[in-house]
Image (tube, rainbow, N blue to C red; front, side, top):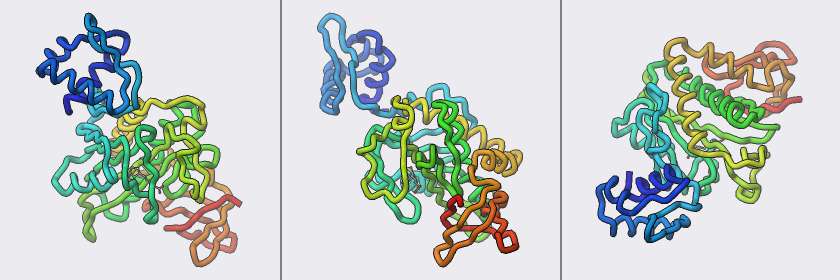
Length: 324
Ligand code: BTN
C-alpha cells in the first residue's frame, strides 16, 4: 500500500475528528514533511482536507476511492479474498488477473479497480467503467474440474451477485441466462468469464464481474442496445463500494467452497430459483433462426434446456432468450 493510501485509510478511520501530523508520521514511520506532501497530493486528487495548526488534519469529503486494506480487513474467507490487488486504474481487471495467473498467483486471488480504461464486455463489446462509481473485479480460480464444467462458475458468480444485491439493498435481482443479472428487466451486472485450458485440463478461470452501483443515467453510454440500471437509480441511495465488494467476496468464497465439496447441484438450484424464465415460454434468437418453447432447466455444462413447442428438449448453448 502506498503512503497516500495509508494516510487516506487513517483519515477515514478518524472521520469524526482530527488526526495530528505527528501521529501520522509516527504511525507510518515517515517525516512530517512527507505527510504534508501526501496531503497535498490527496488535495490535488479532489480530496477536501481541513488542516488546523493545533489539531492536525481531518478528511471532509472526497472521491469514493477503494483501498485494499479496507477491503481485506477481517474478511471472513478461506480462499477467495486471501489476496486482494486493489488498483486505481487498469485497462481491464480480467487482463490483469490473467497476467497474475500466468505469473503463478494463487487460487482465489482478487483484482479490483476503481476505473478501467478498456473494460471488456461479452462478444467483444466495451464495458463502460467510469471512475469511483461501480464495481469492477476479477477473481482468479484454479478449479480441478473437467473443462466442459467451467461454465458452472459463471452461474455461481451470477447467483452470488444477485443474492448480495437482494441482501444489501432489498433489490429483486434476477438472473438471466447465460450471464446477466437484472433488476426490473434492466441489466445491473454483467459477467465475463474467461478460461485458460488444454483439452482436458483447466489451468485457470477468470471470473470477471461488473456491477453498476452508483452509475447515473448520464454515465451510461447513449447507444446501449439493452435497458440498464444501477443500485443508485433503483434505490435513490449511494451504495458503499467497499461494503459491496467485501460481501461479494465472502459470498463467492462460501459458494466456491460448497461447489468444491458438493458440485454444481446447490448452485443450479439457487440459479433456477432466481431465474424468471424457468417454466416460461420463450423465444430464442439463435442467430440463424428462432426456436420457441418452455424453459425446463440448466444442464451441468450450463446449457439451457428448452422443451421445444414442436417436440424434443433442445440444449441451447448460445442465443438470446426472450419471454413470450
Ligand atoms: C457483459 O458484457 O455483460 C460482461 C461485462 C463484464 C464486465 C466486467 S468489469 C470487471 C471485469 N473486467 C473486464 O474487463 N470485464 C469484466
